Amino acid sequence: MQEKKEDMATNTTTKNPKKANLLDHHSIKHILDEFVSEIVTSRGYIEDVRMSNIRLVMGTIIIIIALVAQFYNKKFPENRNFLIGCIILYIVFNGLLQLIIYTKEKNAILFTYPPTGSFNSTGLMVSSKLPRFSDMYTLTIASADPKSISAKKPVEFTKSVTQWFTKDGILVEGLFWKDVDGLINDYAKESKKSK
Image (cartoon, rainbow, N blue to C red; front, side):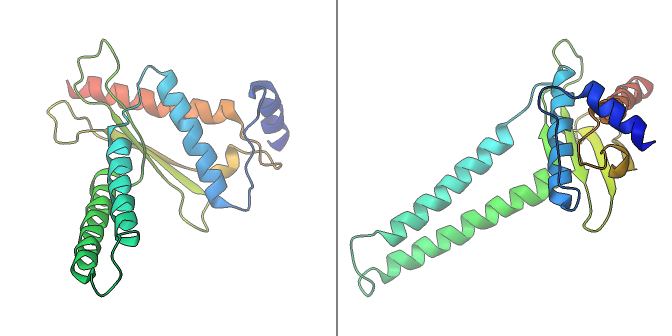
């Protein structure tokens, strides 16, 4: 089995094979998530970066508030009320940012628009989990707007990451591509069944 994986790895890898440190689960998850994004976008889904942009704007506002509080031209006893206001604003904007991340993003690695030419009004939300001290990778594809009338049931798979990596930590892209592509096809079939 290991020899077969290594053969597939050498046959399916491009110029730059994706290599992970097999002892670091963050490295493994990062490579798998990155490749999932490549697979989904290659299927005609365009990445929706609105949520990332909102997070960047909120982070920028938080940094500006901190910088203004730090470099305000008056010294401490005179600027006490101003500093209290900046601290309150800092806490409020950080709270809003965490609320957005917790309620909207969850474990999402990719939001997409619906594919062009599709009658579906929502894109995809692709999320993944790789618990600490576990080799079980869970990939979920759901509707980006679950409250929409065209939202479909989420589909997911949970598999061991050991079947997608060689002993040297190189991702066997062909095997992983097949599994993710199959999940996307299952989601598309689920949408046809629900109509």
